[in-house]
Amino acid sequence: MTALRLKQQGVPGLLITFCGLDGCGKTTTIQMLKQELERRGHAVYLTKQPTDAVRKSEIFRTFMDCPEHDGYDYRALSLMAASDRIQHSNQVILPLLRQGNIVISDRYFYSCLANLRARGYEQDRWIYEIASHIPEPDAAFFLDVPVETAIRRVRSRPEEKDRYIDVPLQVRLREEYREISAGCGGILLSSDCSPQETFGQVLHKVETLLREKAGVCAAI
Image (cartoon, rainbow, N blue to C red; front, side):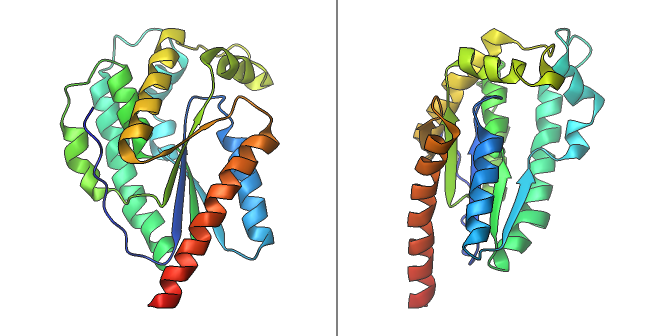
C-alpha cells in the first residue's frame, strides 16, 4: 500500500491523533489524556474528524446506520469527508498549533483512507494526492482491538445497543488500520486491556514527544 505523505508542520504546538474501530477505546483514552495534560498545565483542544457538517449529513448517516446504501456512492461520501478534513485541518487545527497548543483529534485523515480501501476502492489515487494538504501529526495512535471486542463495547452503550454494524467491514477496517499504521510511522497499540493500561501506553509516548518538542524549542 502507498504511504500517505502528509504536510510537514514546523509549528510549536503538538498534534496527536487517534484512529481505530468504533469501540477501540479512543474516546476514553482521549479524555484521560486531556485531563492529565491539563493537570500538568498544558492548553489542550479536543476535536473530531469528520466534523458535524459531514457526520450529520444524510449520506454519512446512511452509510453508518443502514444496511442498504444503493442510493449513494461511497466515493462521493469519501470525497466530501476528505474536503471537510482539509478545511478543518488547515482552518481550525493549524492555527491552534501555531499558538503552541496541544490538539488531540478523534480520528484523522487515516480513517478516510482506511474506509475507502476497506470498501473496495484500493485503486483510487486521489486520496494520496491530496494528502500533502493535510498536516502530519506528531503522534498518530492506532488503537487495535479484536473486532468481537469492539462490537461488544459498542453494544454495551444503551444508545447503540441496536445499531447496525457491518461486521465484515469491521474486519477489513482493522486490517487497513494496522497496515496504514505500519506504512505511515504510526503508533499501533493494543487496547484489548483496561482503559488505564491503554492510557499508560499512550502517556508514555506523549511524554517522550513533549520532551523532544521542548528540546527543539530550547535549541532555536
